[in-house]
Image 1 (spheres, rainbow, N blue to C red):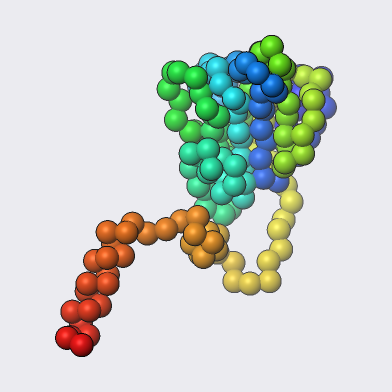
Image 2: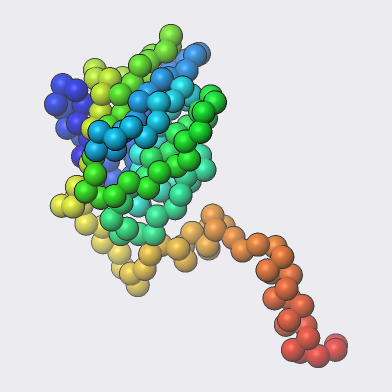
Length: 173
């Protein structure tokens, strides 16, 4: 659940993104349960669920959460200096993003839908009663599908070692 300063509530199945609009940078203060995580200047901040962690957040260098992991992730976007690695936030925590828009302002994306927000403070929580996704295949953690799509790939050195071991076990040709 995402609550703006004016108490409007929104839901995201995949991710919530605060992103700069136009030139300049977005400045934001991010905290977890009122404990400061980072004050950043950059392109924005991604907050993703386990389901959404394999999309924009992962592309921006964020961690991948296995399906149904009771947590969400916060990934800074193109931070201009400083240091803030992506953060895994426990399910029961509240993540707060206070935005100070730059010259061009900022936009919010909820599951890819852009809007110009009326608020500049967002409180994000993971809702345990959120939507249930139905699958018609075997339930898993989603890793096999990511491997099939090439989003997770083994190290070339490991693959070469496997090829050498297979050649040795087959014997000379």
